[in-house]
Length: 365
Image 1 (cartoon, rainbow, N blue to C red):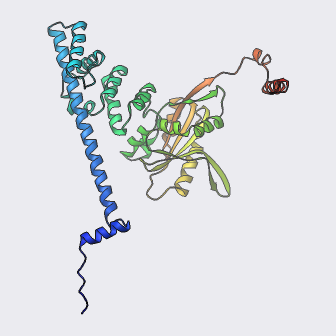
Image 2 (cartoon, rainbow, N blue to C red):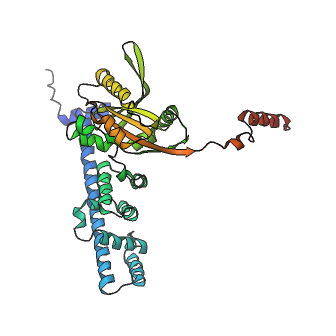
Protein backbone atom coordinates (compact mmCIF):
# COMPACT_ATOMS: atom_id res chain seq x y z
CA UNK A 1 0.00 0.00 0.00
CA UNK A 2 1.43 3.41 -1.07
CA UNK A 3 2.49 5.70 1.73
CA UNK A 4 0.31 8.80 1.98
CA UNK A 5 2.23 12.09 1.41
CA UNK A 6 1.83 14.75 4.04
CA UNK A 7 0.92 18.23 2.78
CA UNK A 8 3.83 20.63 2.90
CA UNK A 9 3.60 23.43 5.43
CA UNK A 10 4.23 27.09 4.57
CA UNK A 11 7.49 26.88 6.52
CA UNK A 12 8.65 23.91 4.48
CA UNK A 13 7.82 25.68 1.23
CA UNK A 14 9.71 28.76 2.37
CA UNK A 15 12.76 26.69 3.35
CA UNK A 16 12.74 25.02 -0.03
CA UNK A 17 12.49 28.41 -1.76
CA UNK A 18 15.43 29.68 0.28
CA UNK A 19 17.48 26.61 -0.57
CA UNK A 20 16.88 27.07 -4.30
CA UNK A 21 17.59 30.80 -4.14
CA UNK A 22 14.06 31.77 -5.14
CA UNK A 23 12.77 34.95 -3.49
CA UNK A 24 9.34 34.32 -1.92
CA UNK A 25 6.37 36.04 -3.54
CA UNK A 26 5.58 39.36 -1.91
CA UNK A 27 9.07 39.77 -0.44
CA UNK A 28 10.13 42.74 -2.58
CA UNK A 29 7.09 44.94 -1.89
CA UNK A 30 7.37 44.01 1.80
CA UNK A 31 11.03 45.10 1.80
CA UNK A 32 10.26 48.35 -0.01
CA UNK A 33 7.44 49.18 2.42
CA UNK A 34 9.76 48.45 5.34
CA UNK A 35 12.49 50.68 3.89
CA UNK A 36 10.05 53.56 3.51
CA UNK A 37 8.87 53.09 7.08
CA UNK A 38 12.43 53.05 8.46
CA UNK A 39 13.47 56.08 6.39
CA UNK A 40 10.39 57.97 7.54
CA UNK A 41 11.21 57.11 11.14
CA UNK A 42 14.82 58.25 10.67
CA UNK A 43 13.69 61.57 9.23
CA UNK A 44 11.19 62.13 12.05
CA UNK A 45 13.84 61.25 14.62
CA UNK A 46 16.34 63.63 13.01
CA UNK A 47 13.76 66.42 12.93
CA UNK A 48 12.85 65.77 16.57
CA UNK A 49 16.51 65.80 17.63
CA UNK A 50 17.11 69.00 15.68
CA UNK A 51 14.10 70.71 17.26
CA UNK A 52 15.32 69.71 20.72
CA UNK A 53 18.81 71.02 19.97
CA UNK A 54 17.50 74.33 18.60
CA UNK A 55 15.25 74.70 21.63
CA UNK A 56 18.19 74.03 23.96
CA UNK A 57 20.35 76.62 22.22
CA UNK A 58 17.54 79.18 22.32
CA UNK A 59 16.99 78.57 26.04
CA UNK A 60 20.73 78.86 26.78
CA UNK A 61 20.94 82.03 24.73
CA UNK A 62 17.89 83.51 26.46
CA UNK A 63 19.27 82.69 29.93
CA UNK A 64 22.71 84.13 29.19
CA UNK A 65 21.19 87.25 27.63
CA UNK A 66 19.09 87.84 30.77
CA UNK A 67 22.22 87.52 32.91
CA UNK A 68 23.96 90.06 30.72
CA UNK A 69 21.08 92.50 31.14
CA UNK A 70 20.28 91.89 34.82
CA UNK A 71 23.63 90.98 36.37
CA UNK A 72 26.02 92.64 33.96
CA UNK A 73 27.76 89.47 32.79
CA UNK A 74 30.64 90.36 30.49
CA UNK A 75 32.92 88.58 28.03
CA UNK A 76 35.11 86.99 30.76
CA UNK A 77 32.11 85.38 32.46
CA UNK A 78 30.76 84.02 29.15
CA UNK A 79 34.21 82.64 28.34
CA UNK A 80 34.33 80.86 31.73
CA UNK A 81 30.83 79.50 31.13
CA UNK A 82 31.94 78.01 27.81
CA UNK A 83 34.95 76.31 29.43
CA UNK A 84 32.88 74.93 32.30
CA UNK A 85 30.17 73.55 30.00
CA UNK A 86 32.78 71.82 27.83
CA UNK A 87 34.35 70.36 30.98
CA UNK A 88 31.04 69.04 32.32
CA UNK A 89 29.88 67.71 28.92
CA UNK A 90 33.09 66.66 27.13
CA UNK A 91 31.20 64.48 24.65
CA UNK A 92 28.93 67.28 23.44
CA UNK A 93 29.89 69.76 20.77
CA UNK A 94 28.46 73.24 20.54
CA UNK A 95 29.62 74.84 23.79
CA UNK A 96 32.45 76.94 22.36
CA UNK A 97 32.57 80.62 23.21
CA UNK A 98 31.71 81.50 19.62
CA UNK A 99 28.68 79.21 19.58
CA UNK A 100 27.37 80.54 22.90
CA UNK A 101 27.58 84.02 21.40
CA UNK A 102 25.51 82.72 18.46
CA UNK A 103 22.98 81.33 20.95
CA UNK A 104 22.63 84.77 22.54
CA UNK A 105 22.24 86.33 19.10
CA UNK A 106 19.63 83.67 18.27
CA UNK A 107 17.63 84.47 21.42
CA UNK A 108 17.76 88.19 20.63
CA UNK A 109 16.75 87.56 17.01
CA UNK A 110 13.71 85.42 17.99
CA UNK A 111 12.74 86.69 21.46
CA UNK A 112 9.01 86.24 21.82
CA UNK A 113 7.93 82.75 20.80
CA UNK A 114 8.58 79.07 21.43
CA UNK A 115 11.32 78.33 18.94
CA UNK A 116 10.50 74.64 18.40
CA UNK A 117 7.08 75.54 16.97
CA UNK A 118 8.54 77.91 14.37
CA UNK A 119 10.15 77.13 10.98
CA UNK A 120 13.58 78.18 12.31
CA UNK A 121 13.30 75.29 14.77
CA UNK A 122 13.06 72.85 11.86
CA UNK A 123 16.27 73.75 10.04
CA UNK A 124 19.79 72.83 11.24
CA UNK A 125 21.70 75.10 13.59
CA UNK A 126 24.34 75.84 10.96
CA UNK A 127 21.62 77.17 8.64
CA UNK A 128 20.33 79.45 11.40
CA UNK A 129 23.79 80.79 12.15
CA UNK A 130 24.36 81.51 8.44
CA UNK A 131 21.05 83.35 8.17
CA UNK A 132 21.80 85.45 11.24
CA UNK A 133 25.21 86.33 9.84
CA UNK A 134 24.01 87.22 6.35
CA UNK A 135 20.42 88.48 6.62
CA UNK A 136 19.32 91.38 8.81
CA UNK A 137 15.68 91.79 7.75
CA UNK A 138 13.33 89.35 9.50
CA UNK A 139 10.99 88.94 6.52
CA UNK A 140 13.83 88.06 4.16
CA UNK A 141 15.42 85.70 6.68
CA UNK A 142 12.16 83.78 7.22
CA UNK A 143 11.68 83.60 3.45
CA UNK A 144 14.98 81.74 3.13
CA UNK A 145 13.94 79.48 6.04
CA UNK A 146 10.71 78.56 4.21
CA UNK A 147 12.58 77.89 0.96
CA UNK A 148 15.11 75.72 2.81
CA UNK A 149 12.29 73.60 4.24
CA UNK A 150 10.52 73.44 0.88
CA UNK A 151 13.56 72.36 -1.16
CA UNK A 152 15.77 70.69 1.45
CA UNK A 153 18.72 72.99 0.79
CA UNK A 154 22.07 72.12 2.30
CA UNK A 155 24.00 74.89 4.06
CA UNK A 156 26.23 75.38 1.00
CA UNK A 157 23.24 75.65 -1.33
CA UNK A 158 21.56 78.11 1.05
CA UNK A 159 24.76 80.20 1.12
CA UNK A 160 24.88 80.26 -2.69
CA UNK A 161 21.28 81.48 -2.95
CA UNK A 162 21.87 84.16 -0.31
CA UNK A 163 25.08 85.23 -2.05
CA UNK A 164 23.15 85.42 -5.32
CA UNK A 165 20.42 87.57 -3.70
CA UNK A 166 17.66 85.13 -4.64
CA UNK A 167 15.15 86.90 -2.38
CA UNK A 168 15.32 90.05 -4.51
CA UNK A 169 15.34 88.17 -7.84
CA UNK A 170 12.71 85.45 -7.37
CA UNK A 171 9.45 86.26 -9.13
CA UNK A 172 10.75 89.60 -10.42
CA UNK A 173 10.61 88.89 -14.18
CA UNK A 174 8.14 90.96 -16.21
CA UNK A 175 5.31 88.57 -17.20
CA UNK A 176 1.71 88.52 -18.41
CA UNK A 177 0.88 85.43 -16.32
CA UNK A 178 -1.93 87.12 -14.37
CA UNK A 179 -3.76 87.65 -17.69
CA UNK A 180 -2.91 84.34 -19.36
CA UNK A 181 -2.86 81.73 -16.59
CA UNK A 182 -5.50 80.84 -13.97
CA UNK A 183 -4.88 81.28 -10.24
CA UNK A 184 -2.90 79.70 -8.59
CA UNK A 185 -0.94 78.63 -11.70
CA UNK A 186 -0.10 82.25 -12.47
CA UNK A 187 1.47 82.80 -9.04
CA UNK A 188 3.42 79.53 -9.15
CA UNK A 189 4.72 80.26 -12.65
CA UNK A 190 5.68 83.83 -11.72
CA UNK A 191 7.65 82.60 -8.69
CA UNK A 192 9.48 80.15 -10.96
CA UNK A 193 11.13 82.98 -12.89
CA UNK A 194 13.85 85.38 -11.73
CA UNK A 195 15.25 88.72 -12.82
CA UNK A 196 18.07 88.97 -13.47
CA UNK A 197 19.44 85.47 -13.98
CA UNK A 198 23.02 85.16 -12.74
CA UNK A 199 25.13 83.21 -15.22
CA UNK A 200 28.40 84.06 -13.50
CA UNK A 201 29.80 80.71 -14.63
CA UNK A 202 30.02 82.24 -18.13
CA UNK A 203 32.82 84.60 -19.12
CA UNK A 204 31.99 86.50 -22.30
CA UNK A 205 33.05 89.56 -24.25
CA UNK A 206 31.02 92.70 -23.64
CA UNK A 207 29.84 92.41 -27.27
CA UNK A 208 28.93 88.70 -27.09
CA UNK A 209 26.20 87.24 -29.29
CA UNK A 210 23.27 84.90 -28.68
CA UNK A 211 25.12 81.80 -29.85
CA UNK A 212 27.90 82.32 -27.29
CA UNK A 213 25.41 82.63 -24.42
CA UNK A 214 23.38 79.66 -25.62
CA UNK A 215 26.42 77.40 -26.06
CA UNK A 216 27.82 78.48 -22.71
CA UNK A 217 24.59 77.54 -20.94
CA UNK A 218 24.56 74.14 -22.63
CA UNK A 219 28.25 73.55 -21.79
CA UNK A 220 27.42 74.31 -18.14
CA UNK A 221 23.95 72.77 -18.17
CA UNK A 222 24.10 71.59 -14.55
CA UNK A 223 24.87 75.09 -13.28
CA UNK A 224 22.29 76.52 -15.67
CA UNK A 225 19.57 74.23 -14.29
CA UNK A 226 20.59 75.05 -10.71
CA UNK A 227 20.17 78.76 -11.44
CA UNK A 228 16.79 78.12 -13.07
CA UNK A 229 15.59 76.41 -9.89
CA UNK A 230 13.81 73.28 -8.79
CA UNK A 231 11.98 71.05 -11.26
CA UNK A 232 13.65 72.02 -14.55
CA UNK A 233 14.98 69.46 -17.03
CA UNK A 234 16.92 70.14 -20.23
CA UNK A 235 15.17 68.93 -23.41
CA UNK A 236 17.25 70.33 -26.23
CA UNK A 237 19.34 73.07 -27.83
CA UNK A 238 18.25 74.51 -31.19
CA UNK A 239 15.24 72.23 -30.93
CA UNK A 240 13.72 71.79 -34.42
CA UNK A 241 10.06 72.42 -35.19
CA UNK A 242 8.80 71.75 -38.71
CA UNK A 243 5.89 73.99 -39.68
CA UNK A 244 4.46 73.98 -43.23
CA UNK A 245 7.60 72.40 -44.67
CA UNK A 246 9.99 74.84 -43.02
CA UNK A 247 12.15 74.07 -39.98
CA UNK A 248 12.38 76.55 -37.11
CA UNK A 249 14.78 76.23 -34.18
CA UNK A 250 14.08 77.02 -30.50
CA UNK A 251 17.21 78.26 -28.72
CA UNK A 252 16.61 76.12 -25.60
CA UNK A 253 13.67 73.86 -24.77
CA UNK A 254 13.11 72.89 -21.12
CA UNK A 255 10.47 71.05 -19.13
CA UNK A 256 9.40 71.75 -15.56
CA UNK A 257 8.13 68.66 -13.74
CA UNK A 258 6.60 70.63 -10.89
CA UNK A 259 4.55 72.86 -13.16
CA UNK A 260 4.02 70.07 -15.73
CA UNK A 261 4.77 72.25 -18.74
CA UNK A 262 7.39 73.03 -21.39
CA UNK A 263 9.46 76.23 -21.26
CA UNK A 264 10.66 77.84 -24.49
CA UNK A 265 13.78 79.94 -23.79
CA UNK A 266 14.87 82.51 -26.37
CA UNK A 267 18.20 84.31 -25.84
CA UNK A 268 18.78 87.89 -26.99
CA UNK A 269 22.27 89.36 -26.49
CA UNK A 270 20.83 92.85 -26.76
CA UNK A 271 18.18 95.03 -25.19
CA UNK A 272 14.65 93.63 -25.24
CA UNK A 273 12.74 94.43 -28.42
CA UNK A 274 8.91 94.14 -28.47
CA UNK A 275 9.23 92.19 -31.73
CA UNK A 276 10.92 89.37 -29.79
CA UNK A 277 7.53 88.41 -28.35
CA UNK A 278 6.16 87.54 -31.81
CA UNK A 279 8.79 84.88 -32.43
CA UNK A 280 8.38 83.42 -28.94
CA UNK A 281 4.59 83.40 -29.25
CA UNK A 282 4.91 81.46 -32.51
CA UNK A 283 7.11 78.84 -30.81
CA UNK A 284 4.65 78.45 -27.92
CA UNK A 285 1.79 77.74 -30.31
CA UNK A 286 3.88 75.16 -32.19
CA UNK A 287 5.09 73.38 -29.02
CA UNK A 288 1.57 73.24 -27.59
CA UNK A 289 0.33 71.72 -30.84
CA UNK A 290 3.19 69.31 -31.55
CA UNK A 291 4.83 68.36 -28.25
CA UNK A 292 2.47 69.05 -25.36
CA UNK A 293 0.82 65.98 -23.83
CA UNK A 294 -2.90 66.29 -23.04
CA UNK A 295 -2.02 66.24 -19.34
CA UNK A 296 0.56 69.02 -19.70
CA UNK A 297 -0.17 72.64 -18.93
CA UNK A 298 0.27 75.34 -21.64
CA UNK A 299 3.86 76.11 -22.56
CA UNK A 300 5.56 79.18 -21.09
CA UNK A 301 8.01 81.41 -22.94
CA UNK A 302 11.04 83.07 -21.34
CA UNK A 303 12.94 85.75 -23.22
CA UNK A 304 16.43 86.24 -21.72
CA UNK A 305 17.91 89.54 -22.83
CA UNK A 306 21.03 91.52 -22.09
CA UNK A 307 18.94 94.33 -20.64
CA UNK A 308 15.38 95.63 -20.83
CA UNK A 309 13.11 98.55 -20.18
CA UNK A 310 10.39 97.28 -17.83
CA UNK A 311 7.69 99.59 -19.21
CA UNK A 312 8.42 98.52 -22.79
CA UNK A 313 8.32 94.86 -21.72
CA UNK A 314 5.00 95.33 -19.90
CA UNK A 315 3.40 96.98 -22.94
CA UNK A 316 4.75 94.27 -25.25
CA UNK A 317 3.22 91.48 -23.15
CA UNK A 318 -0.03 93.08 -22.01
CA UNK A 319 -2.42 91.91 -24.74
CA UNK A 320 -0.74 88.63 -25.67
CA UNK A 321 -2.75 85.45 -25.02
CA UNK A 322 0.31 83.21 -24.48
CA UNK A 323 2.19 83.23 -21.13
CA UNK A 324 5.58 84.89 -21.64
CA UNK A 325 8.14 86.31 -19.23
CA UNK A 326 11.01 88.70 -19.93
CA UNK A 327 14.13 88.74 -17.76
CA UNK A 328 17.68 90.00 -17.94
CA UNK A 329 20.84 87.98 -17.43
CA UNK A 330 24.28 88.78 -16.06
CA UNK A 331 27.58 87.07 -16.89
CA UNK A 332 31.23 87.70 -16.19
CA UNK A 333 32.51 90.17 -18.76
CA UNK A 334 36.06 90.55 -19.99
CA UNK A 335 36.93 93.45 -22.25
CA UNK A 336 38.85 93.13 -25.49
CA UNK A 337 42.43 94.41 -25.55
CA UNK A 338 42.87 98.09 -26.41
CA UNK A 339 43.68 98.67 -30.09
CA UNK A 340 47.14 100.07 -29.28
CA UNK A 341 48.11 96.78 -27.61
CA UNK A 342 46.68 94.34 -30.13
CA UNK A 343 49.48 94.86 -32.65
CA UNK A 344 52.24 94.52 -30.06
CA UNK A 345 51.24 91.02 -28.90
CA UNK A 346 52.07 87.86 -30.86
CA UNK A 347 49.24 86.00 -32.59
CA UNK A 348 48.33 82.41 -31.74
CA UNK A 349 49.96 81.27 -34.96
CA UNK A 350 53.21 83.04 -34.07
CA UNK A 351 53.20 81.49 -30.59
CA UNK A 352 52.66 77.99 -32.04
CA UNK A 353 55.47 78.49 -34.57
CA UNK A 354 57.83 79.64 -31.79
CA UNK A 355 56.98 76.62 -29.63
CA UNK A 356 57.55 74.27 -32.56
CA UNK A 357 60.91 75.92 -33.22
CA UNK A 358 61.94 75.48 -29.56
CA UNK A 359 61.06 71.80 -29.67
CA UNK A 360 63.20 71.26 -32.80
CA UNK A 361 66.20 73.09 -31.29
CA UNK A 362 65.98 71.26 -27.95
CA UNK A 363 68.52 68.36 -27.69
CA UNK A 364 67.03 64.89 -27.27
CA UNK A 365 68.22 62.51 -24.55
